[in-house]
Image 1 (cartoon, rainbow, N blue to C red):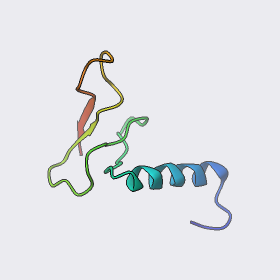
Image 2: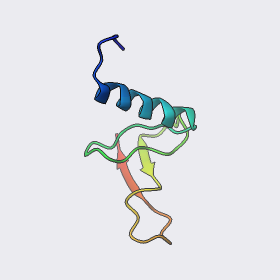
Image 3: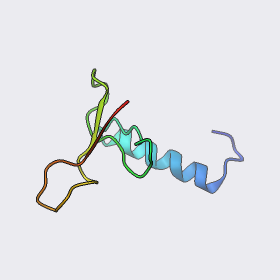
Length: 67
């Protein structure tokens, strides 16, 4: 990242780096706002954000999408 990167660019890079450091794949959903929370390196093209997109707090299924 360049020394002149905007604050928004630096914050996006920090969030992405934090998600990967936490042990997540962290690929962003095509519509934005959701990230894959599966382990990195999964071999299928299924991505799941288990924290966002649930119908209720007791639901175990979040947002799922294919790459």
